[in-house]
Amino acid sequence: MVKLNRIYTRTGDDGTTGLADGSRLRKDSMRIAAYGTTDEAMSAIGIARLHAGPEADSMLARIQNDLFDVGADLATPRMDWEGPDFAQSGAEAPWQPLRVAASQTARLEAEIDAMNADLPPLSSFILPGGTPLAAHLHLARTIVRRAERAAVAAAAEAEINPEALRYLNRLSDHLFVMARHVNSPAAGGPGDVLWVPAANR
Picture 1 (cartoon, helix red, strand yellow):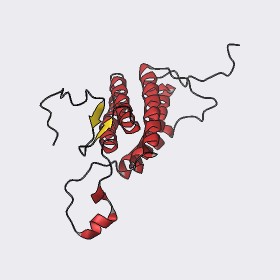
Picture 2 (tube, helix red, strand yellow):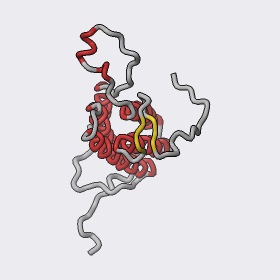
Picture 3 (cartoon, one colour):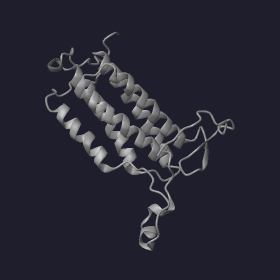
């Protein structure tokens, strides 16, 4: 249960921040960058939702909630009691960390397949644009990619839940396909905005 009574605590004035297990890290560490950029992606999706119809808004609402799960996962170092040795010991874990599950990534894949089913194959790379929703989805997609890069860098320093990395990787694909989907003429959009190589030489 989350309960916030105070917004400022002054504990971060020394350039560190607290993780879910009570330990502290410098604010410029890759783990902090990973979940901070995940928060940024969540905010960009919030703006995209202002332009979304009911179906897209429902998907994006679920994704926002999932991204909070991703952030909580990234903010929680691996606990000693998460391993098989502890489980075999029969001891009771003090608390269960929130971890991203494979089912969350699988849902993204199912939604990607459904949205992609009626889209034509791409003949060039996409330029971000088209409808306002598509433009905001592309912005969110690039922020998710940055979050993924930070999470991969964090995984080189400490153990990170692989499913959180998979979720971020799949989410950028999801937002890309959703942008194409809402730009499609069938959805009332202008169609793909395609890159024309060397068009302005």
